[in-house]
Image (cartoon, rainbow, N blue to C red; front, side, top):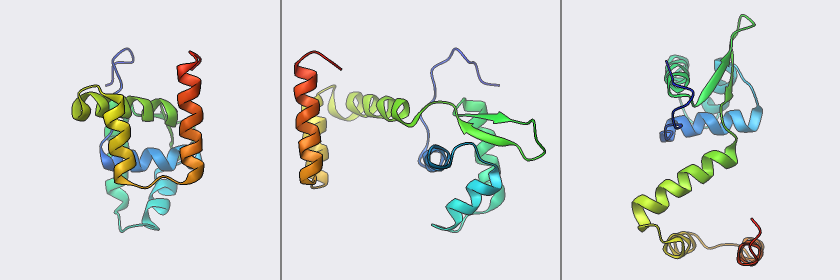
Length: 131
């Protein structure tokens, strides 16, 4: 059983895929998530079911068992999880250097003009002291 006061555990790639479905669709049954993932890659229903059991134990999802088909929801919003993952990556791979992380990200994939403008706005906002 998960400890509600403990820090949320970092999701695996497979768990992140399920969370992405939940963030997009909202509360969903195992079958609904399975059908969505099945459109992208072959996956067994029982695999998704087992993943949900593990994710519930880890505190990544919550389960509403009021109906016959249990509905699962992500326990944290997408933005919160992204911030946690980015912070973890920042420490583990970039020794806490935000500029190295940003340069690495921009070197890995060319950003669009729109994305670059958004980044400039965010940097200006952060430099101004408002977050």
